[in-house]
Image 1: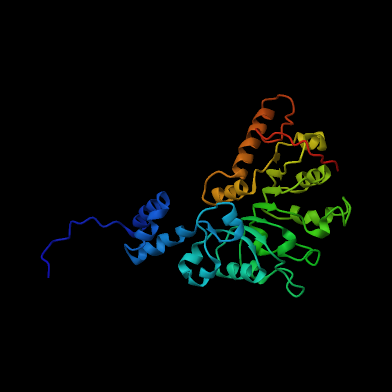
Image 2: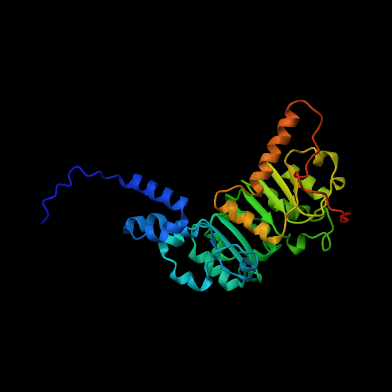
Length: 311
């Protein structure tokens, strides 16, 4: 046996060790596979950081150069520890069975970008059970693809109870003016207004000014309402809407930039929500100085489109 005296060696508390290794992994994600070899406890601490966010490989992610993506075929190989640590995931253009398998595998998901190839619900299950076990904070989706409306007349489910940020790629077909003329759809949009913690809401298209006014009025906790559209123009909104500091029009760039924006936010860097919040803070500050009502709701450096957008 060795006679070397180790009594004076410095031994860090496990809590401090954990912080140190997580900081090192966050600063250099490429070092994570090597750091995981140090000890089993280190592997458990930092393995989930490999998948923050977990972007699933698809034609969309490849076409838009989103970087390394996770093949769906490797999902069964994802360790329970890593799976439980995944908080954010981009799932793009997958069949329903694959989407539901992903949601079942990742029990801690809070931030999900979900673009599906087919409806996820059935007549027997208007809201898939895989959703009911999750607790969303941020959700990006076409609501009509994940749950059956109007079969569901409420969003009072635990998965939506903590939802603070919601972007709709499109509204459910039964809410569209073409099938249920506005304001007849107001009771349907009221489901959004009833979400108890919703503070940030984005619509990915041009919508009637009357709907924007309804949402600003009905959503009690709303601090930010974003229209993501290249066609939205100042003239379509009433002064009451235009002067509301919570309202922002942003013109998304090409698809690749839009998707990379989500990845940026999922990694803790600024995304369009952060830019909108800063813009709103500026509007509130200008209004708070006692100046004229501020109707500059189009995000700066976003030139207005010449496209027609009449209601």
